[in-house]
Length: 117
Image 1: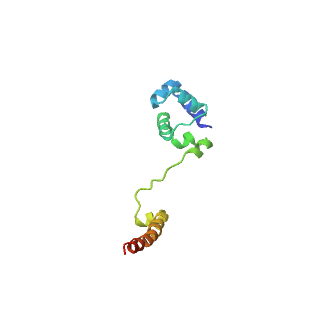
Image 2: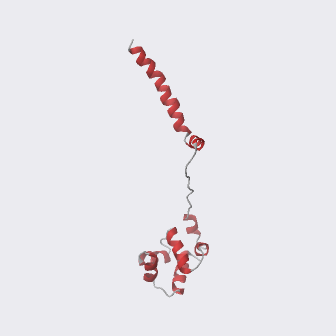
Image 3: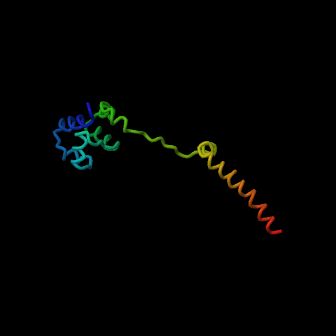
């Protein structure tokens, strides 16, 4: 079963109109209509609200909708990285700084010194 059909079914089980549901989760009734027609999908926060309102698991709410499952992504929190994680991720910056600027300075400093003689 597609998510839109499931939302409509659960909404009708509660005897709610689209306006009623929209008011409960603070969206427009047009959003509810788009979800039920499968022309748009609710964001993850709204999915959680819907699962709580309908008293169903989030998994059972979206399980039948393969398109939605593909669109849902979980972002990995990177947090803070230590020195070695920084070096492995941004080695190219270190390379440019050390060899690019370092190489340029090894040319510039003798040139300045020689020009002052």
